[in-house]
Length: 166
View 1 (cartoon, rainbow, N blue to C red):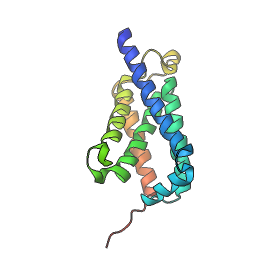
View 2: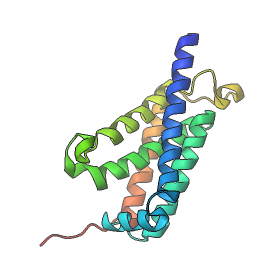
View 3: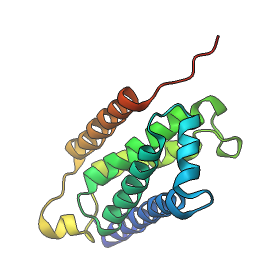
View 4: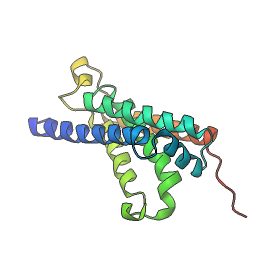
């Protein structure tokens, strides 16, 4: 890979990592804090909403920090994908595509980037690369997809109880 490609991977990896940290921080310390986040999650049909709020904070900040470092990149990307799948399915799916209408556009972009990073790997400027821990190509994308989808399915199976309409 060229120096320009590695620099581009670093820039996008840093951007996604910082976005995830900011998102987790906002769930924790922004607006309504954990209480507000828990209330929102309860409204989406998630049981144990306070636990869900803390899990989202830890997952988003943790995945973001790992992405910034380029450490355990495939697992960090699987966490990003899972968060985006849950958000897309529970909060944004019914609002259409466009983010300005509360649609799934934003979560789709971050989710696809997470899978793409699984295939690309973290690039030259990453702890994974320095330590020889890179998982790239189909294997990397498979880890992101597999772990991300299984984590999402598990969370929804255990904690999601959608409201019934009569």
